Length: 198
Image 1 (cartoon, one colour):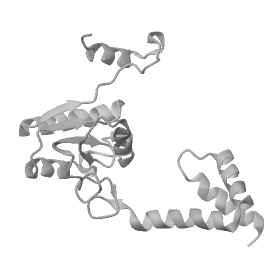
Image 2: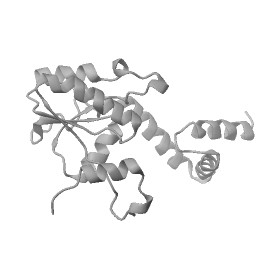
Image 3: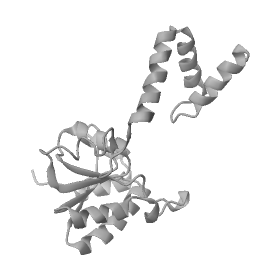
């Protein structure tokens, strides 16, 4: 195989990664070409290792290397609360805040009729099963504040409330350092609704 063909195959594969455009793919490919063989081997090994060892937690569907993830097996967590998120990366974002110490449930996406994703394609049945089997007192819905996230949150609230479990939604509003004049109406409206007494 020619050098040009080998390079093009690498560029094509890198270009399939989310957020990697043609220029980024080119920079990464040339970096790998200029790196020593050991660096390339370490990268290839890390990719293969994560694909072989990391899977979904059997309880919450976060990433795990054992049957259950580290959060589900942590005895110091508040087991009366479940924070429902769309994707495993959302768990990482919430964990970085250090403000939440309960359990999680990863839906594996959000309701999106445009993408033909309905409630049956998500892990909602598994969530309802956990509410029946575990002593959960509150479900915190932490889907993104967009149309799909709001649709999913509304569906979950309608489904869960009749079960006698408290349902809450993450507050959304103005970012710190933001200007009112640049805020969209939905964000500004939410900020007014979620106001707090000083």
